[in-house]
Amino acid sequence: MDKLYAFEKLPENIRQVGEQPKHGRVYFEDYVVTYMKEVFKKRPEKSIVVYLGKPGSGESAGYQFIYGAVEMAFGFADGKDTFSADKWDSLYEIIQDYFPGSQILGWGAGVCMMNSALQRRIEDIQKKHFGKRNQICFIWDESEESQTLYRFVDPQLKKMSGYTIYYGKNPQMQEYVLRGRKKESMEASYVDPVMSTVRETIKKNEERRQGRKTIAVAAVLFFVLTGAGGIFLMQSNRKIEKLEQTLAVVSGNHSKSTTVEEDSGEEENTTDAPQESQNPSGSPKGLETPGESELPEEPENSLETPLPKETSNPQKPSASGKQEAPVEKAKQESVKNSGSESSSQTAAKKTASPEKKQPSAKKASAPTYQSYLVQKGDTLSQIVWRQYHDLSKLPLIKERNHITDENKIREGQRIILPIY
Image (cartoon, rainbow, N blue to C red; front, top):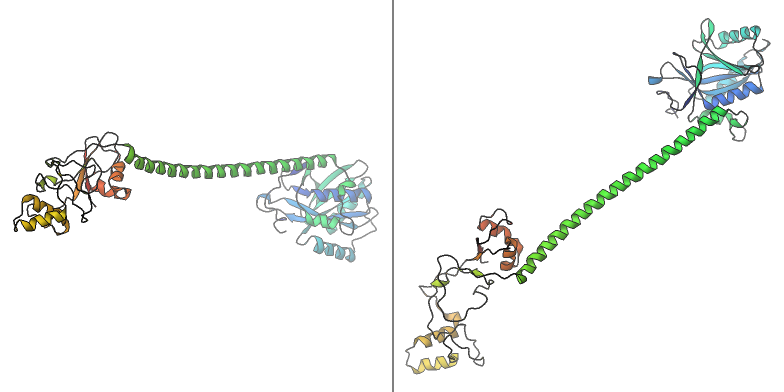
């Protein structure tokens, strides 16, 4: 309530009556104007209206704002009626009940016809009861339907060029007007076409502002939702791209064939046995295991793969096309030949019991890496996946081969692939 009646800024919704004075403007609230004109018309020269309000501050400093009007029965035309103590007490009770914190800023009255005697009587009332500087006097002349606003500048009333009507919330005046009666607008008894037009315009402007506010909120909400949807779509696209890249690497292991390249400085295996699709370490075709040439050469009739321990397994042909005797037969021949073993019997024993085979002093240690020659269209991630089926080893391969950008490998480049 205090903020509602703190006049620090000038009102926006106003209507000017007459010319606007350069100094000391007076602002009447719309309900006050409606109420006082009703009193002036119904009881001219029988009642006065006491104006209540506050002076402005800040941007509104030097202006007066009247938001309350209290009727007081007073027959001032003949000069016989006076302001008694009871009337003042009744006025202050109303101020305390309906307009707490307000100040008396002046008075107003309606006259049937202005004359010199009535003018002197009005000036006398102003000096005796409303003699503070800048307190106002509002006179409505019923005969000419004219209105005049005065400001008291000691020792006389000074006519003002006009006043301003402002429109705003005024619950205090509404409660006072509607006290003891049904709540109805004072416009029913006094119709001002100009005020009606202004109020209708204000109502339409308010509706437009509400409509623009609703559109603005909807637009902001739309852009927020659109932005959120765009971010979600971008994240989804990144996830789909990563999934497609992984699928491409996996499918490339089955669809792309690679050629077998040997490491530089190494010799081909001279064994006449047919080569298998994978090397002894189980790596894919196209990879080379260094150190294979250092393995001791087996005799021509040696077995290519170890014979199973079970004698019931079928015999496996050797590189020369001859079928070798089972393991048990080889052992029997070894006993019959009085401890002298031929090269073929020695190979059979080694094949029959691979777990007891002693490493040769000339045989090199097991290889620790393989190499791969990059083909056209290869990517480093595809090579790592085909070798290990695990892309987590990609950083180790890049470090081992001094590769900074996995997408910049060239055709014919040799990649070292450690054996894990």
